[in-house]
Image (tube, rainbow, N blue to C red; front, side, top):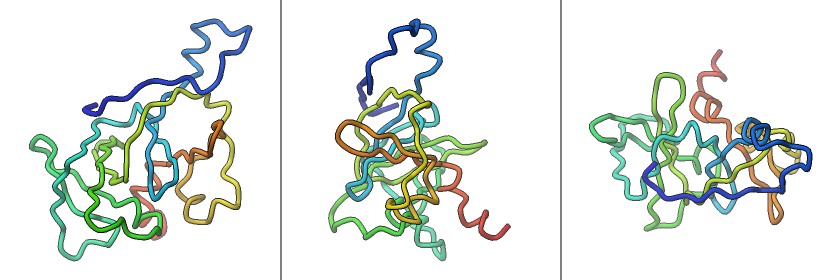
Length: 169
């Protein structure tokens, strides 16, 4: 990844857990901010984080498709997560951060407000999203983690990318 990120343990290890068992159980998540909401995506699916991104608009594309970016000679579709999640537009003059994720055989750029750090969390601690989260967030969520100071919504990259195709099927 291009962005620097630190690894933080979210909770102390279990007393009976061996270091090998902990490594097998833990999973890294790149944390993101989208309209003030803390989100996470599995770090193993993230290829790059790009702070300065030039997005070329695609005529007649749906509004959540921001356009394409050129990633070292490869054209990558950019998805505006604010629009995909039915949130208000970013303030004028703010430039999104592109989190390039690999899914299937392709790469896609998820445009977010900020990319923060990598958290190492135990997948056993993931919970279903609460109904108070909102229908759109629940649709694109793979679950939540209750962190000491807030909730982190784990985004389901597959649903974010292919929601329109699932609706038509």
